[in-house]
Length: 109
Length: 114
Image 1 (cartoon, chains in turn purple, orange):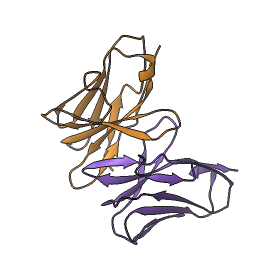
Image 2 (cartoon, each protein chain N blue to C red):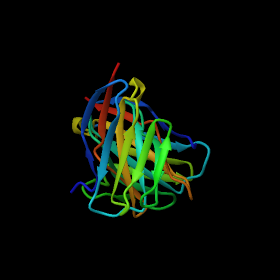
Image 3 (tube, rainbow over the protein chains, first blue to last red):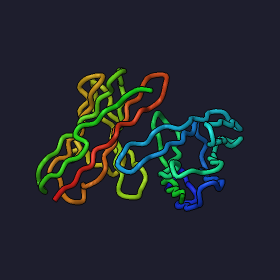
């Protein structure tokens, strides 16, 4: 059973477009994190959201945590080729981090 | 942010040999470290939780006798893949948990078993 479902799995868009990726679960998490991973490297933490309804912004990236703390979204404005990568959401549970399968994003120049 | 290193960054070995991977927290002490495995184009799967001074806790389906974990100090955890086989080829990533903060991930070790 996949606790965290991410959608879409793959996304290829033109530079300058906006996009949203989603992370959904039937379970409540104490916190949700978003990571970006480049090929051959470990994941790098982008943001942690802990409060239901919380919105955090990181330059062109906007992260939202659902009111019920079961889902989250990542919105990228005016995507750039440098945004290309694997975006992983992860939920905190019992002192562990459980990862979703990720959204592989490719921004075309 | 905190720094976690892994060594080696990549390794190629023959089937049947054992390989040791080190995970170090360079600027903080970590009582808890985690080991993940990532197959190509897939997500990270937690293998085990490494606790300093005690036995590791393995996730369901992970063979503890095959993947030996030692967390001998507050800055070092090692994962030994014993009698490696081609199906063990993967990207192994560790993370170290800094108390009151979060997990910090290492850069990963790519293991290829011939």
